[in-house]
Amino acid sequence: MSHLELTDGARIAVIGGGPAGSFFSYFLLEMAGRVGLELQVDIYEPRDFTIPGPPGCNMCGGIVSESLVQMLAAEGIFLPPTVVQRGISAYVMHSDAGSVRIDTPMEEKRIGAVYRGPGPRGLKEARWDSFDGHLLSLAQEKGAHVIHSRVSQVSDHASGVAVGTRGRSLQVYELLAVTTGINTAALKLFDGMDLAYKPPRTTKTFIREYHLGAQDVSRYLGNAMHVFLLNIPRLEFAAIIPKGDYASLILLGDEINDELIDSLVESPEIRQLMPADLQLNEGACQCRPRINVRGAVQPFDDRIVFIGDCGATRLYKDGIGAAYRTAKSAAAAAIFQGISAEDFRRHYLPACRAIEGDNALGKVIFWVTRQIQKHRFTRRAVLRMVAAEQRRDIGGRWMSTVLWDMFTGSAPYREIFQRTVHPAFWTRFLWDNIASIVEQIAGFRRLRSPDADWKLPHTMDDSR
Image (cartoon, rainbow, N blue to C red; front, top):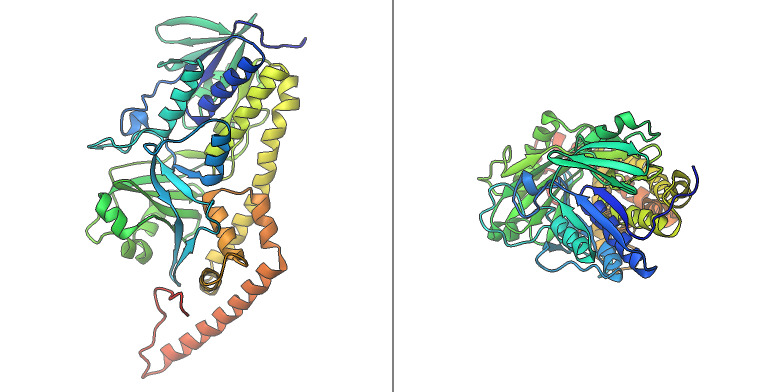
C-alpha cells in the first residue's frame, strides 16, 4: 500500500482501557500535541474501575517496581499514595530448608503493591484508588474519550477500520490499537480479517485474595513480599503480597490446577506464615488468568497495532512495564513514522523483539531455578548464600541482587543472566552447595543414631 499516516482530525480507536491502552492514548496525544496534530482518541473499556471485585478487576498480581515508577515520573506520570496500597522494602524467601530475609539491594530498588481495580470482592471500605483507573484518568486528561461499551464487531473499511458495539452504529477510524490483553474473547473479532497476526502462546496462572485486616497483615507479613522456593512440579513462582487489609497469593507456572494449588497452600511453609485460623482453601475472591509466555506473530497490520499482553510482554514479570514500553513505541511510530504495516514493522516491531529476546534468557534462568528447586541441598545452598550476603555491606550481594530482580522484574533478564555468569557468583554458590551437602550428610548420620535428638531446623538463623 502507499504510505499511510495520521492527519489533522484523524480518529483513533483503542480497544481496552488497561495500562497498555491508557499508556498508548496518553503518549499518542502528548506526541501529537508536540507536532501540532489534532486527534480524536476513543477508548473502548466496558469495565468500571471503581467497582470492587470482577467488574473492576484486571486480573494481575499488581507489583510495580521502583525503576518503573521512576521512568513514569520522568514522563510526568505520578502514582499518588492512594494508588499504592503498600510499599515493599524486603522479600522473605521460604523453603523446606529454612527462611531468609532479603532487604532491598539498593535504597532505590523498592517496589509497590497495587490493585488494578479498587480491591477484591466484598470490599467494605474503599480506601485506595484503582491503578488502572488512575492511568485511564490521565489519558482522559490528555483528551481521550472513554466509551464504556464492549466492542462486538471489527471490520475493514475503505478509509480505515470499522468498530461497532451493541446499540451503536459502526464507527470508522484511521487507526485501531488493540490493547485487550489475552483474558478476553475480543481477539476472536479479528479472525475474519485476513491478518498475519497470531495471538500469543499462553498458560494458566492463579490469584487468590485473603482478607486478614490491616493489623494481621502487618503482624504476619509486614512490609515484605513472601516468596516460596519449593519442590512442587510445574510451579515456577509463588508469592504472598501484602496489600492494605488483604494478602494476595500469586502462582505462576505451567497450567496451574487445583492439585498444584492445594499442594502449595497445604505446605508447612504457607501454614506457618499465615494466621492459624485462616481458611487457606478459600478467599475473598480468586481468578485464573492466562498470561503470555510467547509473543504474538506480527502484532500489527495496516492501520492496526496490537500492544501489551496481546502483543509482546515480559515473561512472568513486569507486564505493566512492558505495556509502558510497547505502548510508547507504538505511539511514536504512529505519530512520527506512519501507520502502515511497514511503518510498524520498522519502528514498533524492534521493541517487541527486544522483549522476546530478553524472555529467551528468562526461560534459561527459570530452567536453572527449577533444577535448584528439585534438590534440598541446592535450596539450602541458596539460603546459606543469601544469609551470608545479608550480613555484608551492599557490595558482593550476588545472589540477593539476582533474586531481588527476578522477584520484582525491575531489571531485564539479560542483566540478571550477566550477574549469574560472573565467577564470583558461581564460586560462592558452589562453595555453599558443598557445605550444604556436607551438612545434609552429617544430619542424616545424626538422625540414624539411636540416641540422637538432633533435627534440621525449619528456619535459618542469619547469625549462622
